[in-house]
Length: 273
Image (tube, one colour):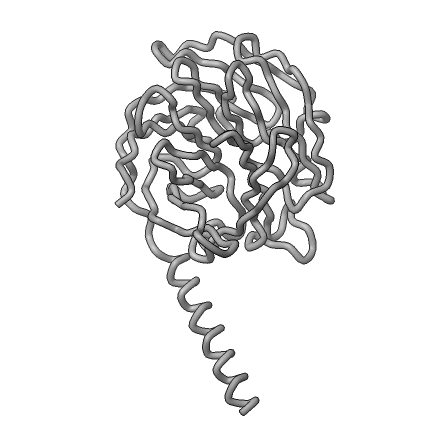
């Protein structure tokens, strides 16, 4: 009986590994149409938008660009020792709220860096200290903060935790964790060996996430029960992952970056079917 159970468990594990490998090797969907491209040398980690301006994010610098004509109207430059890895930002009111970490250093520490959207002056820093990974995302939805703590296989990772430990965390106004969810296995296999680099809540109530390298956006939703997000669908995009942000004034317009091209890209995303 014990032997039968062990054999059954092994077969299930092999079947699961085969499914994960199949998901990992599947081709990306065709890219969604591109509506706008804006050149920005700061576009190395991600982009954020308030509908009038779009912000190009780098590890230690930010550029503010007017969407109407693509002109840079403000820039911020920080000290690299203080800002080793800002990853993604989102606009909340008159503030640009950014996820930052000490990546690729370990042990992993994280902070929330907050800027004035008008001048790009750094307003304050909220230290989160040691956490369940490196903070790569900070988004605002339904009166809560939503953070992603990334984990990696290899560079920037901690022993005992790889990309499978990537976590979405809901936080209160003081950035204290209230609840958390793991990512589904088929999405994690597409992240591997890196992690989730971008995430933005859509107006349709779905969560849209990106990895580090693939030209894909994963539509997710909170589960009715349990602790694993549900994968609803995958959309193609014209850029290779990194941090994203929905444009609040243009429905289905998603901002991302072409890291190698030094540009911010506005994709017109179709609805998830």
